[in-house]
Amino acid sequence: MSDSQSERLARAYASIENRVGAPCEIALVLGSGLGHLADAVENPTVIPYGEIDGFPVSSAPGHKGQFVIGSLFGRRTIVMQGRLHLYEGWQPRQIALAVYLLKRLGAGTFVVTNAAGGLNADFDAGDVMLIEDHLNFTSTSPLIGPNDDEIGLRFPDQSKLYDPELRQLAIDSAARTGTPLRRGIYCGLNGPELETSAERRFFRSAGGDAVGMSTVMEVIAANHAGMRVLGLSAIANAATGGPDQQPDTIESVAEMAAVCGEKIVGILEDLFPRLPAASA
Ligand code: HPA
Figure 1 (cartoon, helix red, strand yellow):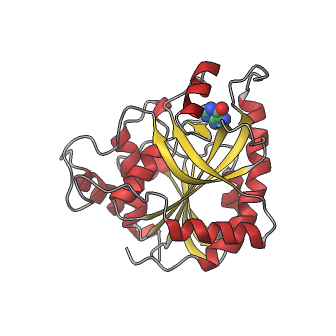
Figure 2: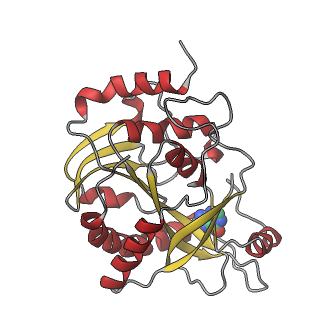
Figure 3: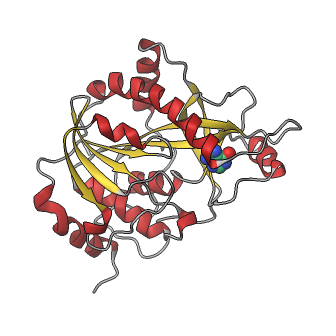
């Protein structure tokens, strides 16, 4: 069997092609504590990752590991209910393969959500942050290795990684729905251990507003494949690393991410019908 990404992609696609129905427009990745957003999908077709040829099966707590395909807020959407993290041991190229499959299934817009710690002292747990840009602190990339020209460029531009038009639409939707929306830079790390307080102060000084263990591999791959990207972070805990820094637990992070999830649903409900039809 070939090791090329486009060969793997072709096999993954062939294994589910006849189950997915009409092409999807939007891909939505659900972060920790946000999995219930998939319940809003109408007439869902559910495909567990284990039934997709060559697909990794996510094992993170609170992540189900399945595609949910159907209509979400009036748009044909494929939801990743359960994402793949580097800390689970997945290779960056495996994470990218999942994203390329979303594109292959028709999605031209990639909407990513995550739970994150707030590095910015102005942020509170329970806030939602629009991702304006990211800092990749994982020391790796899903594009390392031979490039597959059928998928994307060898050296893709990332100067406008989080699509400015989509960001403005999200800002408008937040305003229309009366949802306060923070904006900032997401720092992506490997995890699984949380950051030391010194690391958190360092990431803040480097320009980060929020810190988490996902998103950057997926977004690099989505941009590589020509998708337009929108990102929203659920600020689940304060992560300033200051003298009053409190210890974090996965339980409290999941609880606060669920609070943010309600706000994110409100924004997406207004936003989805307004998202431009993908031209990618
Ligand atoms: N750090 C990293 N990942 C996270 C955090 C955090 O403080 N909160 C939620 N995900």
